Amino acid sequence: MIFSKTLTHWYSNNKRKLPWRQTKNPYYIWLSEIILQQTQVKQGLPYYDAFVGKFPTVFDLAEADESDVLKLWQGLGYYSRARNLHASAKYIATELNGRFPNNYKDLLKLKGVGDYTASAIASICFDEVTAVVDGNVYRVLSRYFGIYTAINSSKGAKEFKALAQELIDKKDPAEFNQAIMEFGATQCKPKNPYCGICPFKDSCIAFNKNVIHELPVKTKSAKAKKKYFNFLVFISEDEKTILEKREGKGIWQNLYQFPLIETEKNISEKGFKSLVENDDLLKDIPFELSLYNKDPIIHKLSHQHLYTKFWVVNVEKLAVEGASINKVREFAVPILIGNFIESFNF
Image (tube, rainbow, N blue to C red; front, side, top):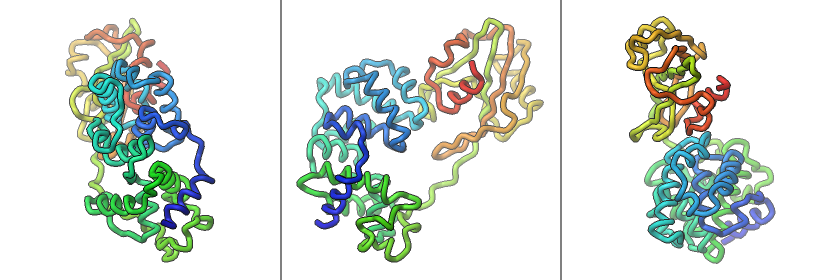
């Protein structure tokens, strides 16, 4: 098909030199694909290099402590990706004797692997004719064919998958899949795409109808909830602080944080001091409380915005066993906490 040939020709002349394009090792391709979910290449590349350097094989990753995996992941966000990565590595190492699933259907059985990732690995590593559909692919296809079906709807997912499957080069699915993703990432960009030098400009519906800014269509998600987080940063005279491991299925599962008090709204220093006086960590203990950041730090997650204050609590001695201040940087923490640790200069 002309579309496929034009696309792969463009790719042969414009593709970026990236380390995961120098191999067909499914472990490395899998690593890159999981890291690049919700992450741009320039941000994900150093993480890929770090993971390959520390865990050169799936056995190395499987044998690692989860805390070490989460620490290496720190700053990438969406930490469930790291936990799923580790769980799947254990499954491959123990149940499959280190042999990676070699087809789309079996790849889907891995924790954290969906249609897109399974298609990418199956086509790139095993030449299976299964099309990838990610944000870049949605953008290219919706603009070129003038498709207004919402990409975040079940109808849209089926429609675009079927179209991509129809277009894929049956003789070289790996090249086609990588080409269309690269084209969306570097040529048909979300904003200011390079339409003037696009090889498809004569046949692209969005360009010729001047509706590039309208596509792809995405239905609006629910408005993000506001939450008010107040972290207690304990500092004792023997230079210890308190870090707690988050349990359960909420955000930042198994990561560490300072003791947290959540309030219904932004709270004043006076109001917060009276609130914490009865906290189990401060009950009947003399303390000095000071607000580190006057204006809340707004940390945006996909479904909630965290308005965050850090309160420094100076005490003579902690009410619980604490962590040495000079060990704080060794803990796996969310980027919000990590940034505070850096600025506070523990």
